[in-house]
Image 1 (cartoon, rainbow, N blue to C red):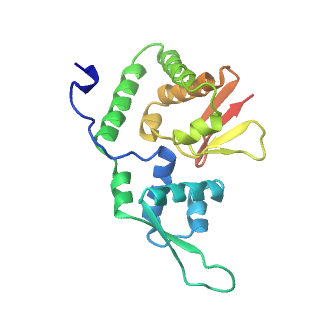
Image 2 (cartoon, helix red, strand yellow; image 1 turned 60 degrees about the vertical axis):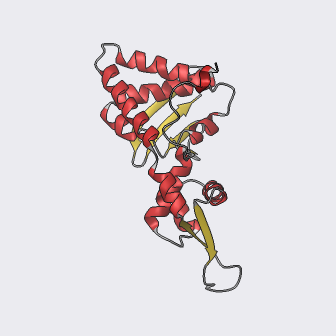
Length: 209
């Protein structure tokens, strides 16, 4: 008997959006139909090329469409981007997403009640990061939904424009932010990392070096 066939099926067959792509889809839905790349990139921050890559990915999966807008002058007309019904369904998530979010909240509540909460949370984050060691840190942070952006005025500093579990982080920063710092340290394989949560309007700051 194949033990992998025992038990229930996954809660949903809907392919989940990555956190970064979900962030683009959410902004697209909020801004309405026929949004230009420049408008969307201004809302999200970061480089427009990164936004364009996520839009192309959403379009390839049927979650977004683009149509030429009326030309206002010479040159090629801008493209207007819109979220499709499939995109709205993907953005809404599924039962598994809700379950994982609730699980994170429950774990954070439990850890916060321990006398060594920060150390335990850091150890969890480090173990998480060690599973991703060898990958580029920027790619890891982007994939997990932190929307990283290098600070051009501060070498070795990355601004984190989003948080994939912001609600829990605001309620238990001593736990969630310690997990995230451990994640970075585990990924890099060293301790020369300092995470400053909620350090500025719209971002946390990550110092590496």
